Length: 116
Length: 114
Image: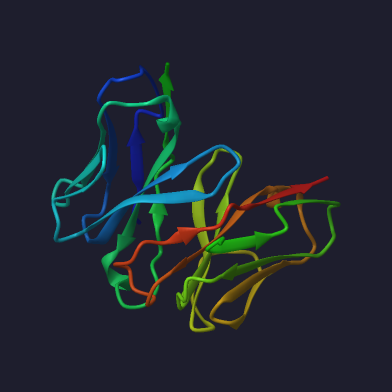
C-alpha cells in the first residue's frame, strides 16, 4: 500500500527566503507525482506534475524534483512571498492505473507561512 | 469560467438524512473523481468515473452512491448520514482518463452533520 509523507508538517519563514518542501513515498512504482497548493476554504490548485521518467519540472519560482528510485520529491520555492502562504500537498499516481483514471495518494501536506 | 464546480458549497444537515452533492466540469475531461478530506486535512479518493463508467471504488460504505449522467457530471448521493461523514468533499477531473494528466479540483463541499 502506497504511503506518502511530507516533512515538515508546518513551516514559517520570512519573506524572500528560499525554501524546500519534502515528500517521500513508499512504493516507487509510480506513474507521476503532482504538487498542489490548497488555500484555506478552497480547493486544490495543481502546481507541477512530474512524470516518472522526468527528474524535474519548473514553473516560475517553483521547481519540483523527483528521485523515483529513492521515493523522494522536493518542491523548491525561490524568493518566497506572503502570497505563497498555503498548504502544499504532494500526491502520487500508481503505475498500475496509467491507462484509465488515477488513484492519487496524498501526503498530509506542509502548511507554509511566509511572514512579511 | 469555473472549470470544476460543486454545489452546494456548504451543507449542514441532521444525522439520518439523505443528501446529494453535484459536480460539473467544463474542461472536456472524460474522467471525474470524488475525494474526501477529513478533519485532519487528509485527502483520500472515494470514486472515479471514466466516460460514465465506474473505474475506482475505494472502501466506501454503501450509503455513498455516485452517479454520472454524462462525462461532464458526477454527483454523489449519501444515504442515512452519520456524524463521521462530516468532511469536505472534493470533486476533480482529468483529461483522457490517464494517470499522466493533472487533476483539476473544485472548491469543495463542506458537509456538517448535526
